[in-house]
Length: 95
Length: 506
Image 1 (cartoon, rainbow over the protein chains, first blue to last red):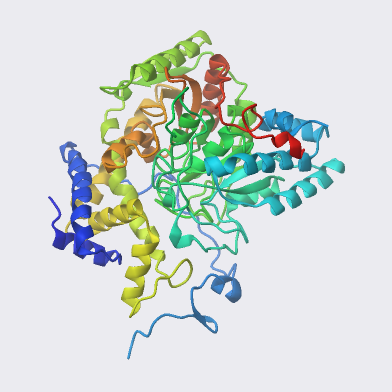
Image 2 (image 1 turned 135 degrees about the vertical axis):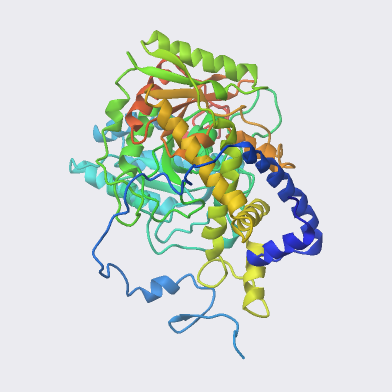
């Protein structure tokens, strides 16, 4: 299934990546070539096969429900592009 | 006193012994490598950041410990750290503009283990952006040049990727070894292209805590170094259980170095027939056959085996890895860390930040991943890929009932020129055709230099083992290494007569 420019635009919005109209065409070409190549998986018989989500073949470990870290406001905010006191700052969201 | 050129001749195991014998100091060794970096890094671009002052302080601390007769596994050993590992107070970019100003306030578990054992960090190694690439051409900090070149050839070659800086630095002797990571071949393919050894351990052997995430079900750290034994020593330090990574295996770390001496007598080595691809260059086939002959001469039995879903590995990978990447990279939104591009409102800020902060390959993979996870397409792409992944794992599980290890080529070619394969993403992806199946199955695999192609470029062989049997992989790798006697070196390297006079600094 080939992606048209409108679909490319929709995916880009979902991914929160701005793309210009001139980029959509080039991207469509590249993504369609990748997706076309991926189509080969349709020839594999997957009837009754369980999906593999990960290869760590072990039960996830349990631990005590306790605070093990924290109180590091300055370290956490040290890389913030903008801050206000102990908070991250962003453009106004609600008028 | 030994000259810097002499010091740089010691491999990791030999340098470790010499440091303990106090034949030279950690400071002298570190200065030799810093001099080599100063001379050659402007040409190779293997390091994004050089931490000379930190390295000197660590070397002095190592000397103080050695003077008291105290030492860890790596006391005084100068290493390069792939710029995907968070290092406290040292900028960590993942090769991306979006993390161009990111200074982690914490240390990755793998690098913390290396520091615990006394290692010296020379700096942060260049890499493909977010580890997405097979050539190191996608780094926002510029391409890395492979220290190898064809005799008389003018083309600059790629070191492979994504751990291109780690491999180039090790091959050119700008470090004794390096940390690297492998999601689909990012340790093994650059090791093959640069004529060095590299091992991707079993998924879960090394903690992923503090490693910038690409595809979490595949990402695994491992070392690159000059020899199989050097890799074993580094892996022994990097590995180990970590409660901060829920997929970290709670297993004892074996004596990997001892495994290198085991030999291969009586082992059954599988040769998967599906790896014999149409159009594979004759020199790769020849070195593969040579490798098998060496193992046979050392007492191994060579067995023809089948991994029937091999051909679907790549396509499966290019659904699973971008899907996981699109989710992992959602965190780069210009709000909490990294570079922000301003916008009128919050959505503009996100979209502008991600449009300007990510390079073309990363954008492509995020978009593919977003698409295959989106409503209406999830089952057709992502769920189907996860089922094919089950079949790929089953191939390995079945075959390992019959054999102890598999031996294949690492990559379908030797190093290619910078700029080649850039016009067609699929052509670039095909580089990883032999490395991806082991990644999909999570099993350990390493590349060992086995010979040169007719152009004088190194070619590696890949050894694949059972889950958590890195010892077998290292034993077979060491056997290939012994038989190959691979002593060729790249023309561009520290300590070579045509390199700049680094000896003046010692």
